[in-house]
Image (cartoon, rainbow, N blue to C red; front, side, top):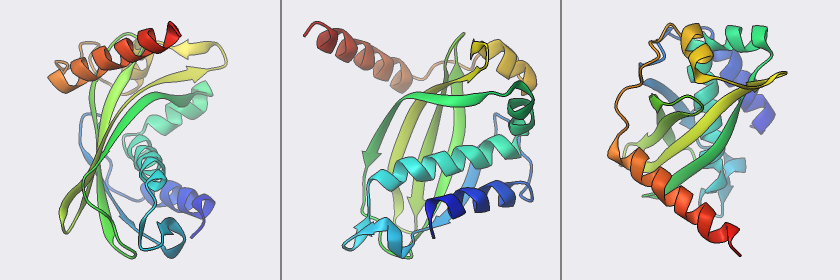
Length: 176
């Protein structure tokens, strides 16, 4: 199945799935197809694509997509970190769990957990924002569209440490 067909299938299917709130964890099944493997295992780049599909499903099911359409906005993923734990085989079904973790004035942080019958096969954390014709959309506007309070849940240590590491990396490389 081509990526375009997967996107369209995810888009239309999400409208018929159970609605969720933005603080709920979303679960989306994905089966690995022949065109998505290298020799015998899932190509590592597909985890990013599967994450994109899971975010599309999440945004439709929590009714954010209507607001995005009205505001002519889209998401920009500025940073993500993936840890691969186990190989994924052809025709294996993955369940991708997606959850919004926390936010600040500019960024929203989420995770994807990829599970199979073997348990967790990969984890991903990401940082993104919304932008539109006028530029970056403040998180407070997005939260209002989601009926969420402006106060973020506490930032987990893993997010704080990841951000510190990312800042150190940028500062180190920017000097060269």
